[in-house]
Image 1: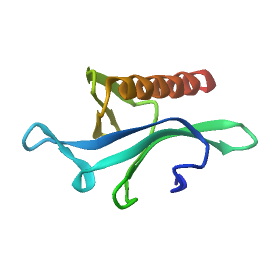
Image 2 (image 1 turned 90 degrees about the vertical axis):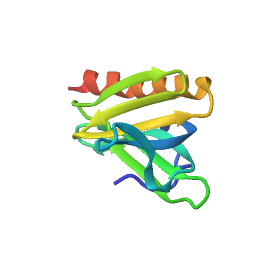
Image 3 (image 1 turned 90 degrees about the horizontal axis):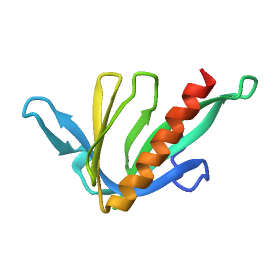
Image 4 (image 1 turned 30 degrees about the vertical axis):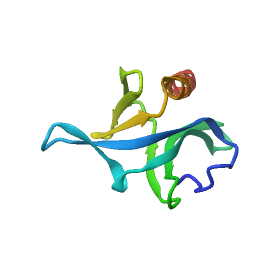
Length: 125
């Protein structure tokens, strides 16, 4: 599990966004964990010091009460989509998550962090 500290220094990128999940019964996106703006980061950690194998996690903590609302590993089945300049979503382990960003610049930074993580994972495998 990823540490709860948003300031642990192991993140590729950190932005503010609303964390969303897909409601398949309505076909729409709904706020995850009651909604509200969160600090969302892409974090890197080394699983095994012997192999230096990295793991990347998308981690979100709601600003209002510091509740962790998202902790999602980036794995080989990870499918990332930029739907709009300020809304991106992904699917992994049959779960669907999305982020509504405050600005298109935050969305671009987050996209770059995710792509860096995916490239690093592909290089290691």
